[in-house]
Structures are given as structure tokens and as C-alpha cells.
Length: 175
Length: 199
Image (cartoon, rainbow over all chains, first blue to last red; front, top):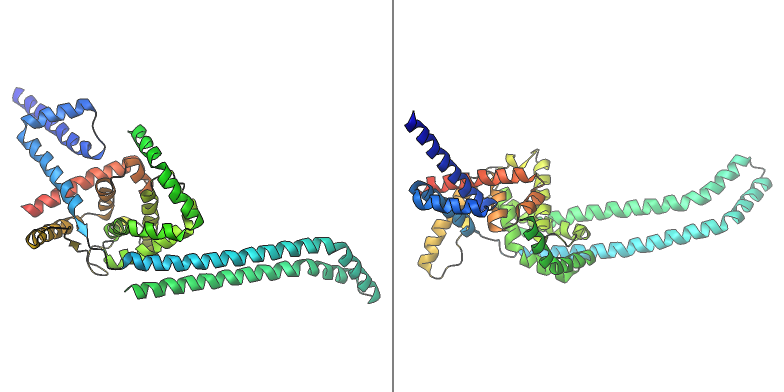
């Protein structure tokens, strides 16, 4: 039974050494483990060989280089600059739109009492039912907002389409 | 280790903050310099993930457009490359989803759907050395190309980009334990592949 126990013990030691060899590279070792591993590697040729293999694999990983296609950065810089300009222009348009919306809202609020009276007077003059001239008043409030919303939606869709078209074209030009 | 990472992050802060400020302003000069600075590293990462030079080239451009659009989301505290790689990774996954694939484990095998990845020789001094390096590099590249993309990715991030484990976990959006397990498995697979090639 004794030789078996020795074999198990040796297996445990080599197993621990193998785990520590990888752990040292992946997440680092505590000083005590580092010392134990160094002692073990000095005494065990097989584990030292494994450590050398691991080091060689990592060296190989670090030395592998890839060929970068010519003009890769230049074409990306061009596309990014163009998109950046588009975004800046879009931002300016959105700002103008926001200012327009705000002014329209302020004007709408300020003129609401007057418009209400005008609608009431028109309703009375034309002998319209109350609900009709009230709908007219609501229209005065909501139509500009709806129109602005539609303009924004239309602009966004147009910008999305342009961006898809541009990236497809840039992809083809890159080839 | 966490403390060391924090100290490193603090020492990097002024530079990363300047990058964050520039990205918020969509500074074209900054973007130009970042594109030039990260050209090789981003392309290599995309190539390791996709295994296809054509796909990597297309995604390279898409990644920078995404950086332009979402630059305000970069906090300037983490390393810029970690943020950049996580954007690139999302794009690869989006592309895969569009192609009816669910995860990186289902990546195309190298050579499928486009030109296969051919590693080039590192800069060398003489034609003879260059030839030897090219040959060796091609062999190594072929071995690495045989690794699963999930392993290739973490090996690249850890041993070439030298990111901390926490940063890798952030890039790949996986728990730290998963990252470690992928690294151990990847390292073991790389060792076996290189040994098999040598013998």
C-alpha cells in the first residue's frame, strides 16, 4: 500500500505545480506559492518542461502579428469626419426646430384667451354648435404641434436612410 | 490586486478624462488620432473575434462610428481600450445575431465566408530573419486560428492587450470566474496546439 500512497502524493504535488504554473500567468501567485513553485520546478524536470511550454505558448501568442489592410485608418477617419459634420448639421437643425417649437408654444399660450374669444364670436356669428367652435379652438392648439412632430419624424427617417446608404457605400468603397 | 488596478486607473485618469471630454465634444482631431493610435489593436481584436479579415475591416469602421455616436457614454475612468473593445464586441455579436447566430461560440470557422486570416511577419531586420519569422508567425497564427473564438478573445485581451481580469470581465460582460475559466482553458488549448504543431 505504501508505494501507492507515495504515487498519490507525487501526483498531488505535480498537479498543484501544474495549476500554479497556469495561475501564475493568469492571475498571479501569492509569495508563498511562488516560492513553493520555484522550489518544485528546480527539482522536477517534467514540471519545469511544462512551465517552459507554457511560457513558449505565451511568447508565441505575443509575437503573432496580423497584416492591417492599407488605408484602414484613413478610410475610417474620412467616414467618421463626414458623419461628425452631418451630426453637427443635424444638431443645428434640431436646435432651430426646438427654438421654433418653444416660440410657438409661448405664442400659443399668450394668445389663447384672444383665440377663445374669436372662436366663440365666430361660433355665435355663424350659428355653429358649441362643440364645433371648441374643436376649432383645439385645432388651433394642436395642429402646429402635430406639424412639428411630423417634420421631426420625417427628418429622422431621412437621416437614418442616408446613414444606411452611406455605410453601405463606404463598405463597398473600402473594398 | 484590486488596489493596484485602482492606482493604475488613477494614474491614467488625466489622459482618459481628456479623451472623455473630447468624445463628448465629438472633437474630430481627437477622433483622428484615436483611430490612428488604435488601428492595429482594434483590427487585431476584431480579427481574433471574427476570424475574417473582410468582416474585421467592415466592423472597424462601424466601431468608430459607434464611438462617435456614443462618445458621451465613456466615463473617462476606465481605460479607453476596454471601452472600445466592448463596443467592438457588441457590434460583432449584433452582426452574428443578424446572421442567425446566438453567441461567439458559434463563430464561423476560419476561412469560411471570406478570406482566411493570414498572420504576417513581425518587423524584422534581414530578409532571412523575415522569412523565418514569417514562416513561424504563419504557423503560430494557424494554431491560434484553431482556438475557439471565446478563448482567442480572452487570451488576446490578457496577454497581448495586458488588460486586468476585471477589465476583461467588463469587456466580455461575463463574471470574473467565467473569464478565469476561459483563460485557463484557452491557455491549455494554446499550449496543446503549439506542442502538436511542433511535434
